Length: 171
Image (cartoon, rainbow, N blue to C red; front, top):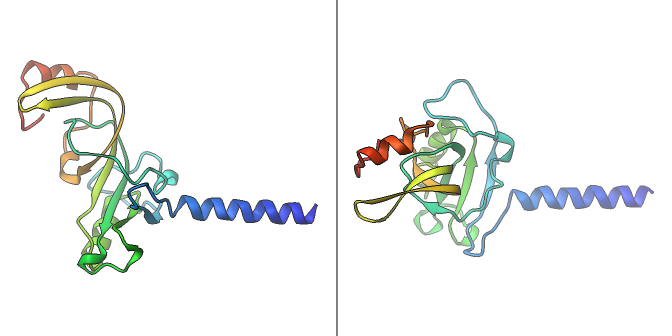
């Protein structure tokens, strides 16, 4: 029984380490996740701090005009721009539950970008061609610029109101 318990413990450790060191087919991966929340924040907190760092590294990028949930803040690091080569010569990121620690980390870390935010959208605006807007529903995960969070959390009538007077600047 002792050997079985030890094997299960080892398997659990491998799983936890693997979850925090996820690599996508592109070679991108998360190398660390900060689940902590400190005080107040200028931006929304991750909806599930314990899941920060577990989302797939690859996602859509931008668009949608509205978001439903903040999943995590990501600081991408580039070895070709001075970041430590923790993923060989491939880019990687550190995930955070709160914006401020991500921003502080990006300012002090060589080869780091400004934080991006990973959001989930249950309803969004698709723009298949410039000026043509299509309301969509589903489960979409995308990286946004953090500044896009301001005043863009979807409310019950956000999509219908946008469609009455669509503009490229968004809501």
